[in-house]
Image 1 (cartoon, rainbow, N blue to C red):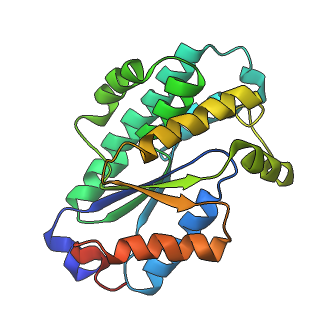
Image 2: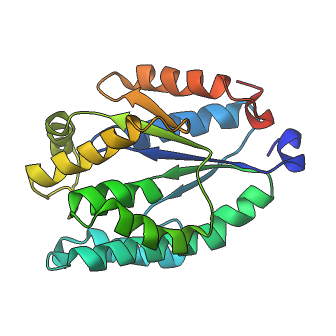
Length: 218
């Protein structure tokens, strides 16, 4: 980490979006860019990010878990999140690090709250236990229409959630769109229909506007 990060709280950046939005590719590019400029971010993902969380991830995404009910899915997601927050994110923030998280609490709002029809209030109430008051400092919403995102999935190995219905993925998209339209300043929308280079430029453009010492090199 850079010397500037040692004297201040770290910075939590989360990346969200429908399936096939290209957010994971964007994360890799942004992390490499930060590393080239002397800031080594901590990269984590959800579900997962810890040894316990990765075991939970395997259960959640396994095609053999097809009988999983919506409530079980939500509770497993939140269990993985609780472990990640306490084992990795809280200590990293205290150490002044930049954390980049591939999906976080907003994913449960979109996937279980909207996609599974459990309701946003229910998800937020359960999320609160895992988060212990923690909120991302910045959230990139990589937005792409469900039909276009799903078409991209044909080029990769898919998991249980990828195989959900068109209606499910439309509800997930609508959940993310509600976040984009919420007016909350931490949400920054990136057009995921563009090229990887265009998405990267948009993300860096947002970071340049931040008044945080960790990003003064950008």
